[in-house]
Structures are given as C-alpha cells and as structure tokens.
Image (tube, rainbow, N blue to C red):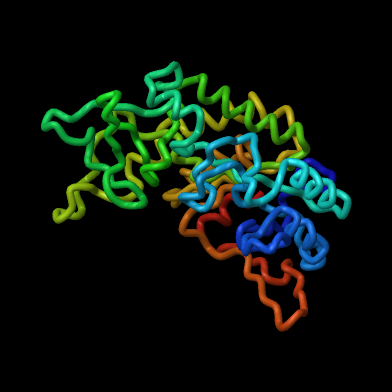
Length: 318
C-alpha cells in the first residue's frame, strides 16, 4: 500500500477503544489492548485501523466531546502507549487513522472556557442574542434533544450546539479556528498518523443567517433534522482549504468524511472528485459496506464480506 492511492482497495476496521480490550482490569478497553490484537486484525485482512476518539474528554458522548485534541484520555493510556500502537501497526503493514471531531468541542475545552469568560476565543464559537420574542435565535432542535441553543447567563447570549449541550459548535467562519484545526491535524500527521475519519464534516457550514427550519412537527417548539444545520454553502470551500493547507503536504494521508444528509452524487462530487479535497465520503444512513462474520474462533477474511453499495454511490467509483 505504498502508492498514493493505496486507500482505494483498503479494508478499514473501526475500533471503539472503551469496549475493545481491557489490559488493566478496569473494565474499560485501552490502547495497549488494541496493540495486543493488531496481529489478529491483520489476519482478518484489515489494512487500516480507525480509532474512535481517544483524546482527553469528559466522555459525555463516547469521546466525541473533546477537551484536548493533543492529549490522550488517561482511561485509554498515555501518548507513549499510542506511539507504541502506531509503531507496532506499521511494523506489520497496518495503517492507523484517527477520528477528527472538529465541528464541535467539549464545553470543557480550554477554547470554550476562554469563550464563556468573554475572552479572545469567544468568537471561536457561534453566539447569538435572543429572538424578537425573547426566545432562542431560531427553532432548530438539537440532535440529542431540546434546542440547539443554550443560554449563557454571564454573556447574555446563546451558543449553538447541534449535538449535546456540552458540545458547542466551532465557528468555522473564523479563520483562527480553521488555522487551529490545521495545527491539530499537523500534530498527529507529524507523529505518524496515517489519516483521519472526519466526524460529521458537512456540519461545519450552516445556512447563512440561521433561518428557522420548516415546521414539520406542530407539537414541538423545536424542529429536528438536518436542514440548515448540515450541508451549508461553505463545506467544500473549507475542505479545499484543509487540503491546500494540510493534506496536500502529506500526500499519503487517508481521508474519509462522515456526511449525514448527502443523498446524491451531485452533492458528493465537490467533496471527493479526483480524491480532493477528501478521498471517501460516508453518508448516513449508508449501505453497510463491511460485514464481519466469524464462527467460533475462526477469522474470515474481511475482503470476502465487502460489497459495493448498489446506489448512487457507485457513480463516484473511479
């Protein structure tokens, strides 16, 4: 897999660290547990190990609420443990992909803690005042329930959280935010990480002006769904900047973007055409492309269970 397009035929295996393998007796999986099973994954026919978030986190949302992008959650081990995992994976020809969660941070992240004090990073997040009727800025419902907006008493403003209230959305309109994210990516790529699975990457741009969502549930004050919250007009622009600023300088890097609500080739092509700015897009819901089946202790090669999705996604095949 040394050629630049190695990812086109790769089998990627997701590991959720907390439930994978415990080596400390705490009942929680850890990085050393993953390292101990790399040979098994290789025997399955895996080419790439995708690690669900292992960063420092309060774990409100299974690690997708990150409080420090450049630190390892101590429940999983240390940075040295991660470095040993990477070295062991590379020794047997496996690649390691990190989960990049940059639509939002944890509310415990230093950036947000500065923001709620009215510091210089306040505009690293999305803030709005009350609506004319004294309520939330719009009727958007959060993925995890309730409003997408949370009131901050000190600042007398609402902050946006498309997901949980503890996951404030980053303001991608701010070039300082984008620059900080490029730095996070370089940090891991310089340590030897082979790429990123990008969480809800098409949520980084919202509909300008934050208009109300169409009312589809008259019984609810908040309207749930993806409209206005995903697939905003600048998703492709931001990702092209990511490619130009970071990915183009690491040509063997693998990138796959999770993209809820992408339902056509026309929507997808600007994000993946000719492998730029991303190489792979994974819509949700998506066709189950990997099915792992084994009987007792027999490991069956994963390649025998990979199927091309019989949908518009075939139009994106080279």
